[in-house]
Length: 259
Image (cartoon, rainbow, N blue to C red; front, side, top):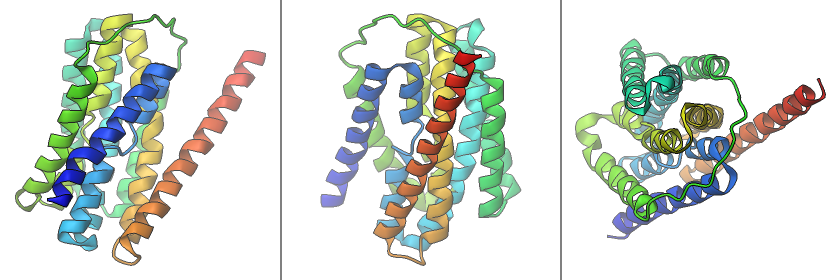
């Protein structure tokens, strides 16, 4: 019962925090925060508690597959954003599914999946350049935040319950599906147009570097270290990656302004 309560509350609180950050600081930051392992991290944690750290370590391979597939989804959405959000959403979902299926069938080792994710993320940053977007104040519907919190809680509970049927890696892939990033992109698209939606998915791509580092380190440490310590070290690796990227991009932005 205690585990169920945690599954229902922890992921929803993380999504609440990410959503409020996005509303406060804009599309890029919103995409950046939403791309962090706010859903997949808790899923892997509960898998470690229920099925053991070795099983959860196998699921991190699926998370790395999901990172690369999310980057492909961002590219697909951004490339077709000018045709409207329904077409862009279809492209994003289709490229996620295709990319995840190909990487899953390839059965690459953990380190190779990490390198593949980094390569696809780098390509996505090139394919989705940064652009200034004129922000406008748009009030979301009252049900927006409660709906996100309910969906993520049900997703975590459902995936952890279905894991014996799905297997470790498939569960990791499904946990990485970018449901909230796509939701943010659609909302920005409808409110401010395709340029704003592209900045949401670009922010998500940036976040996925930390996401990938988190699951790469976690996959290495689970089973050899205390599970809590493994998660703490992995979280620090992800935060360090994000801090380094923020510093590099901030410096690049200042150089561009001077130029």
